[in-house]
Length: 441
Image (cartoon, rainbow, N blue to C red; front, side):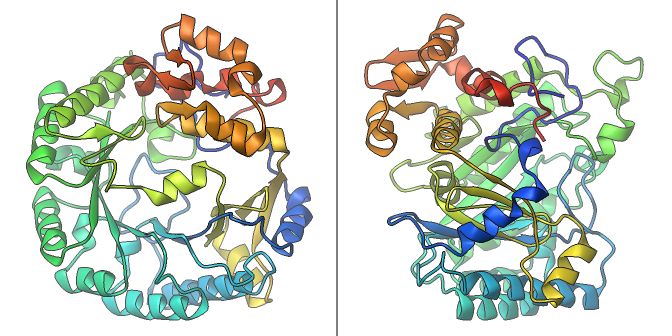
């Protein structure tokens, strides 16, 4: 399946949102030697370095989740995995690409990083910081499922230098959470948020998902109202998609089915829900920082992981099936538990596939991803790539402007209000032709 076409309004199977360029389907095992060469080359001066750690354990598998996660691992399995990811970080720390570079940002994602116990987290982070210290990092983000948190676990995270806590709330209604496979309750949301505020985390993000199964307008409005009452520093509102290899993708009927209990909201509905959330949050003092995110104060509330990555920063993606980018090469690790553990037991980096980008690929990647912030700065691209994006993408920008998605304002290109909400489905207009027809994943 290709990226969603402009006239696709039903929620069909496949990835709708653009996360990288060129598309993942072009990344190949045969390019792994390019990845090794990139890791063994010195970094480009001035390029920030980040570290992503994939913690793939969960209490339950969400029915819309397509990440590599496990719900059946015991304590010994978890220790085996944590030892492996530490081996991977150590191997990476010895490459020429590191060369003493400090970490600019760190991101613990999943899965459910907060599934680990406080003792496991403390041990893991102590050992990680001995290999690649993050005391000078601008941001250390940690994803949490509210029901897995206790106050002492949050105290451990705070003491270890976590600066940005991201709570996967998704919805407040118990029946919706349960039906969609979420493990936490509404009470646990309030309890976890209260502890996080009490402990003084510099930034708390709260995730919502527009379009979870059984959602309706009345409940969505209550979710937005409850979010505003909590007053997090940052709110991320996703629109639910149905990638392949999820529970829902296998069992769910599409819009228009005879069984209303198995219907996923169409894209216009989800966009309307997301726009409503943005509008209400803006009334409460928030401002948009991307197509999915609003923040209380743009000057103070940053999302360094996203901002650095979208601007071409290097990042080691560690853990099973993780994605990274180093010295112009996209990299993904092997995507099975067995292969990941086996390679590290042999002292090998667990690389699975890669893609060696060209200068033009990297230009398009930044244009595409930064357009998701709603704004492109012409001068930035002139300075970095030596091209005027107004000339380079003249036809595509004109088409999107004429359709009402963009405004061309001299030295900047900006999305319109409607354009920001649905920019992902128009980004293929900027792709080089050889990458348009492939299934995105």
